[in-house]
Length: 174
Image 1 (tube, helix red, strand yellow):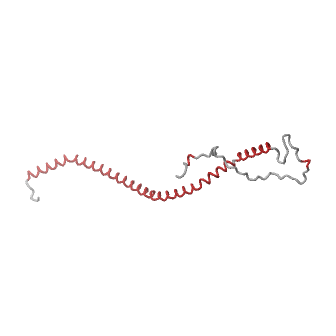
Image 2: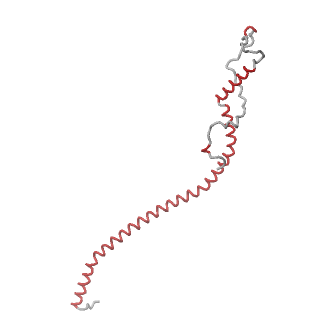
Image 3: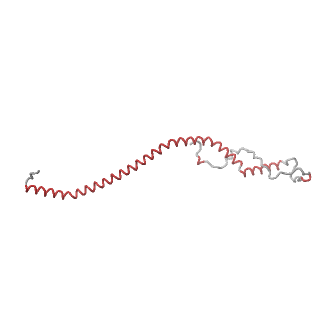
């Protein structure tokens, strides 16, 4: 696997030593367009007490407005979005490499899957043969027990036959 372990990644913002790049916000259209055609100088709002003049107000007002706008951008997730886009750009080449690696592994796995299926069928056949062997051994043991049980009767029959043949003499047919 290339790069860091994917399980170790967090979605937390970058470390403080790596400040987020400044992203200019997309222009936002005002909800209503102001009408300047009928505006008169008397309609303009008077400057506030701490207004020091100038077109855009004082430095502190501008800094406050900048801080407020930056807070709004953070609330909207703009810095996180930029970090995620950077992370995404960094991960795209890794994705291509991992996709290629996955395809190569799948190409190796397919023959192994076929071999596994073949081996499973052979294992089942071997189990069936072992069951037959066990059955034949049980039959053999039963047959040997039956022969052992019949042996005394067989020995008595042989002895009786010998005794009878010995008294009657040899049979000319034999």
